[in-house]
Image (cartoon, rainbow, N blue to C red; front, side, top):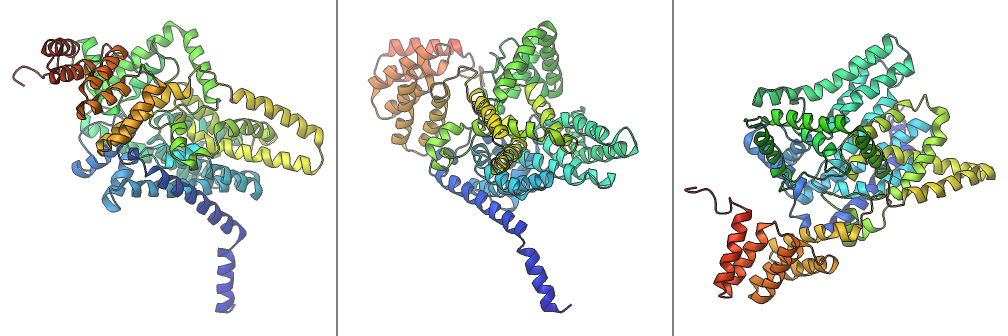
Length: 569
């Protein structure tokens, strides 16, 4: 064979249809994400992080100063923090750059959604539909641009499933690969630990109780152990305690089942700052207060686990109802927010506004699963992965980003149904197609019907405007902040943060009477929050109303005894 012929063969292979599809999907996915990044970057919340995003940002930088081992046990899963530390060390600390790297990972996830779909159904058309759906799926796009870990859990979920399916006829030793990927997923989402039991069960169902299934289970487990064991040993080195991944699991169990739980993230009353920078320590302090003894982080976690299990034992009917409620919410279109709200982001970005959501993918995915059941044995691992991971979400409190790792599976099944329907219509199998469309319409109404009574704009947007207002203030943009806080009080006249923000701006501008009005509204909205009274004291004092100022100061001090620090401190 001549060199020219060899080169032509290499070029032909490089430009194969499959390669062109992959490059096209990657380019489309990346382009969509870069457009969103550009639009998002025009707002100050792009630069000023909060809640979990700030926690991981600080943790990534802390790794660079304290070293890889660090000093404390992990309270939250560590892989994303080390991912950030790597970028900060070798690429850049610029948050735009971080998000571009994440967009590359997100686009690669889309490529493997395509590859997994083709692998499962041997149908390139299904793969293209799945890839394009993933490329324009709103939560994927938003997650790729957050300084947060959801994009990694989705990436590892798709990669693990791809290799579990690809290696179905391979030697047992190769199952170390999906084991490693599931282990990495656990280091991002600890609830994925349930997959350690769920996946090996499929080996035995597919292969029977024999040496092949046993060997696959062993090598799969070795892969998981290779990723988790270093974390466990590291935790032991810094604490002297056996902590497989994190010391925060007990808090999750307690919040999932205590008397105030409703299926969502609802911190107990003793948590005054729903932020991981303070929340874990507040749990530990409360545990020590209740027991009257000092506690390590793991001892605190064990205490809260036992307290949570008490609620399970005392009222199993209530717990069953909570799980049922979470099941309904899991299959609901609404994306329950925490760190970022996709509906609020759609007001800032036209790219997000016109993307796909669960309200479409959910019904299509359910029908795709039903259509696929005749191939259940081949798809068993995919079903198991989905069901086990869904179960791991239902046993904790629910936030929409927790279900994200299951979405690539639903997207693939949604693509399967779309292709199935297209084939039926082309073949003029009208009755079957019509029945399925009727089922689709019914499912659409079920999935897109609100089940929790939440009013998205009234209940969640004020929090997002608060973040926006604070970020504008940090950048010295008083007008932007004023507009954000005004949006809050227009939407929720009784919202504490809106009046506090407007009061502080009025104070800064010397409009003292306006400041007093807003701080009074803040006190009415949150009579147990010392900050409103303290701000009123400052405003009264500047107005020369010293008696009123002293009264407000006394009230603030009574609500927060540590306001002025400890004596002599």
